[in-house]
Amino acid sequence: MISNPVQTIFYTIEQTIKEYRKYAQKNISKQIEDITLDQALVLMILNSEPELTQKEIANFLYKDYASLTRMIELMVEKGYLTRAINHKDRRRFKLEITKKGMLAVEKLKPIILVNRANSLKGISQDEIKILSNLLNKIINNLSK
Amino acid sequence: MISNPVQTIFYTIEQTIKEYRKYAQKNISKQIEDITLDQALVLMILNSEPELTQKEIANFLYKDYASLTRMIELMVEKGYLTRAINHKDRRRFKLEITKKGMLAVEKLKPIILVNRANSLKGISQDEIKILSNLLNKIINNLSK
DNA sequence: TGAATATAATTGATATATCAATTATATATA
DNA sequence: TATATATAATTGATATATCAATTATATTCA
Image 1 (tube, helix red, strand yellow):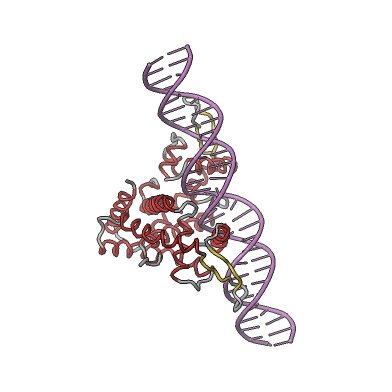
Image 2: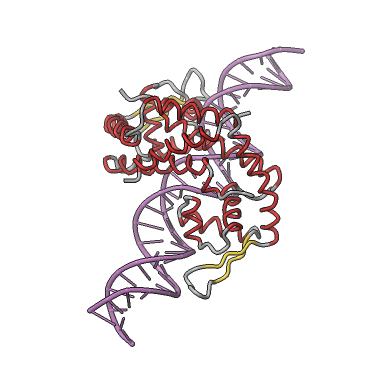
C-alpha cells in the first residue's frame, strides 16, 4: 500500500522550505522591489567572499550552473552586479557588487536575521542541531 | 554579522529536498521515460482519491493552481490522464487515469517505497517523529 | 609543441513556481 | 429574478531547475 505523499516526511520537508521561501521573499520585497530571494543570497555570498567564481557560488547555494548563469545575467541587467573578464583565467568572470548592490546588502542583513529568528522561534539550539543531524543523515543516504 | 547561507538550517532543508528529488527522479526515469516526479505524485494522489479537483490536488501536493493546470495539460498530452467536464459543476474537470496512467501507477508503487526506505535508512520512527515535529514548528512560525 | 583532456560558463529545451489578471460558472442575497 | 460575490481553472509574465550539448580557454602529457 502506498501512502499518500502528504503523510511522508518529504512532504513536510518540502512544505517547510516553501513556506520559508514565501515568507522570506515577502519580507525582502517589502523593502527591495526588484530582487528575488535567490538573487539576494547571491549578493550576500559575494559580499562575504568576493573572489568566488560562478561555479563556486552555485556550489555554495546548491544551485545548477545554468541557473546561476541566468540569475547573474538578470542581476547585471538590474544593476546589482558587474561582470568583467578575469585576466588570470579568461574562462572565468570577475563579479563585483555595484553601489546599488551594496545598498541592497545593507538592507538585506537585518531582514535575513529577522526572518531566521522568527522562523526558528521556540526552537532551541539543541533542537536545531538534532534537526540538522537528521537531515544530514538523509542527505548522506541519498548521495550514494 | 550575517552568516553564510550555507551555515543555516534552511540551507540544509533545501539541500535535503533537492537531493531527494534528484534521487527519486533518477529512479523513476530508469523505469518510466517520460514522467516527472511531480507528475508521478499527481498520478498517485488521483489513484488513491479519484474524485479530487485540480484545486484539491494542488493543495494536497502543496502546489500552485497555475502549476497544476500546466502539469495536467502535459499529462493529458502524454496520455496519462483524460480530462472531461464535470456536469455537476461545470467549472471543474473530471480527471481520469488512462491505461497508460494505471500502468505507470503500478510501476511507481514499488519505486516510491524503495526510494523512501533508502532515504530513511538508519533513521528510527521516533527520529522521524522528532523531525516532523520540528519542521511543523517552523511551518507554524512561518504561517502567521 | 600539439593533441587530448579538463574546466568554466553558456545555450537550448522543457518543467515547475509565483503573482496578478481574467474567464466561466455557481451561489447568495437584496 | 437580477446583481453581487465566490469559486475553479486558465493565462501571461517572469524566475528558477534540470539535462544535454556547446564554446572558449587551460592544462596535461606523449
